[in-house]
Image 1 (cartoon, helix red, strand yellow):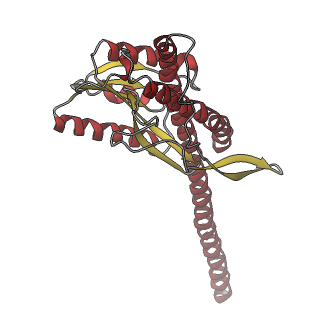
Image 2: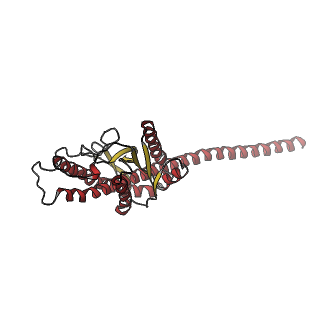
Image 3: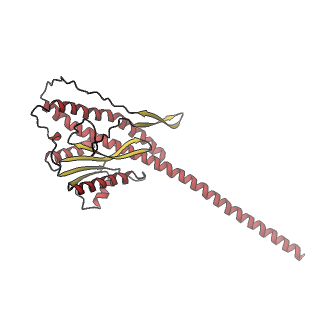
Length: 305
């Protein structure tokens, strides 16, 4: 099972590494365009910041177990956020993604769940679009005033961090931020890329560095109506951010499963070794006892003679 998980880790890790630059650059581009249009009278529903009465939480877990504390850590993160919102007097609704999250929230009818979604074996654009459509509808209809993603950020093969990422309204800093305004982008992360070398698994270290300069020129002119441009890009933003969260969660899950299976294999080897020692001791003790009985019997016959 460790080898199966290792094969999936490589695919999931490549999806995360290849998808992050596009998702983060798209956020920066949207921010730059939105910043330059602040002086114009443009109504963009997905960028409207309004008083928060209800928060939408997209909780992403896995579909299977045998992955250590991966699913529990995400659910605990969501529970902690719900507790914070309750203390602030803010309502919340949940979009549950993954069989483990679905099972958890179905056992707790007191938690309002807008939708249950069972993820596939590997994240797809179609799956992300289903979630994005639901989020778009909730936010535009003002059923929720803020949308947050609760998922596990993939850092390395041995480390994954549960994070809360504010999805809507669009970040005023052009970054992916958590609920405290801190960046959860990949800048500065170290990837331990899983590869093969001479037929054996090996790791290559790689550091992520983001561009800090602006992407759009301050004298940028639009051929089309800016509203049309942003209306076309905002659904792409939603889809890309949700797909990124699904990919990060998948990579974290299979990495956790690989580590769990590795630990299980090591424990099984150690258990086999200990049981072999116990078995050999018992066998040796039995053989020694039989030899002593034979010797004692032989001596008894000698005394009789």
